[in-house]
Amino acid sequence: MKTSDQPMGSPQASGYTLPVFAVAAAKAALYHLLGIPLQGEPEQPTIAVQLQPEHNRGDAVGIPVQQLACVDIDTALAITRSDPGPHLDLTRNTPIWAWVKREPWVEGYPRLILEAGEGLGRQADGTPAIYAYARRLFEVNLLSHLPVQCQLRVRIILPEGRRLAERTSNAAFGVLEGLALLGTRAEVEPSSSADSLEKARRALQQRLEQHKQLAFCVGSHGQQVALRQGIPAERVLVVANWLGPLLVEAALRGVDSIHLLGYHGKLIKLAGGIFNTSSHVADGRLEILAATLIRCGGGAEQARQVLTFGTVDAAVGYLSGLGWGSQVMEEVATQILGRVDRYIQKYANCAVELGVTLFDRQGQILTQSGIRG
Image (cartoon, rainbow, N blue to C red; front, side):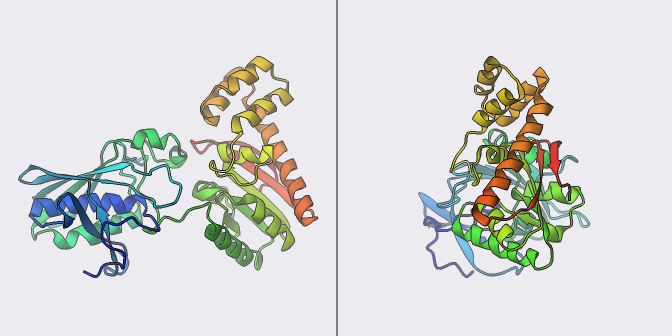
């Protein structure tokens, strides 16, 4: 097998997505079960993971294996740890367990069965939250090593998955009880990098060649909400955290209207004049929410209580219980539109028709203001 130029097991300059480490753990467990030695030193073994499932060949990368053991003659367990490289990612150093069991194969049934263990999310119908790229990665890396007439059952366990999932918007899109193995590539593509901004600028320019009414969606979840609302895909731009520069560039390039769609815990930052929504750049979300409550007529003690919550969701839930939820979120949307308008006027000196849609972690739309298209 051809390997990458980087030595097996050395720190990765780019970093890899969660599916790569899940596949590495499963492949290491299968090797151990079959008596195939891993690469590297005994105290620091690595497993070669094929990264290009669409070609069924190509470069492989060495992923360190933390622990490895046989449970019985047909079952093994391996553990890896997520490493996104230099990029900011909440799954950094997360342990990924793969429990694999060799079983007799019955013709007509799949030879590879993927299961969600503790911490790996499930979709609404109960199926594991393991998406197309990850499934192909499992197939390419495991099936060629599986003995004839054998079926392999793989159960991925993420001991910290439930806790980490509370810090994502997975539940808004039907991923329950944990993290998902999603993505379309092996390498981490950081949303806050300069490369990411340049990529978004190119996508913006391409869309503006055909359309002057655009939807700016914060992340893939915002994109899904836009598509559910009937906004054509060719008018949708996923902007990650780079809202400020892209708003100005769109205005300078002649956009007629921009519809902002995003999770309220992200877009609320715009109401405070924060135009890079990365949590590693600036926060102030609860402070913005408390100030908005005061603006709506709420009391100082209620505003102080808002500041005690750990998340925007919890604070909005508290406000809803007081009967303030809808009014406060409507005011947040109004403040967002005002801030965005002034930002565009300041840096582009032109008028753009604006709209905003805010939704919660369950994907429920909380408020809409301005244009709807």
